[in-house]
Image (tube, rainbow, N blue to C red; front, side, top):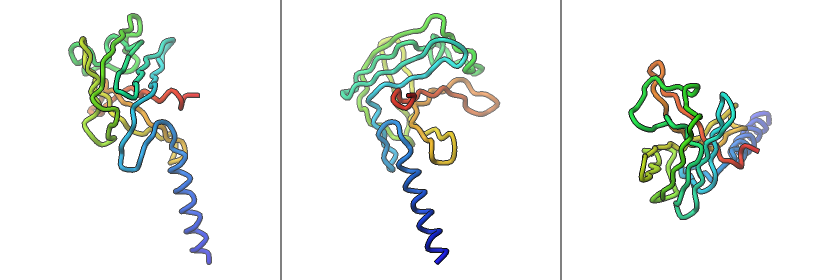
Length: 157
């Protein structure tokens, strides 16, 4: 009897946790529909970078820190070292708005620069507050990766 109740409680918790992971459309196969607005807020002051992706793959990037994945790779770059003083804007078109969380990332190719973002999930605690994110890597830090997280705009409200 007790095992039955524990099993039902565990199943209920798993279902609740999977439905609580909001944000963009995500299925268990790891596919993510990127269409929508993605935001990265400056952690050290005013400003935010935004990526707007249309269902047809057209995208526009505004407020992009001028040294985030641009020019030569700076392996010492940290989030606090991002240059928000002269943000950049770009536009282009993705080949496909579907991306795999476990693949090689998404290439945002513009006439001036190319950026690679990686879809993933960020969970603040166990399972109940997961959100879908787009990660853009900074330089390496202590042999670990450091990155900035763009979150779906509708998950920020």
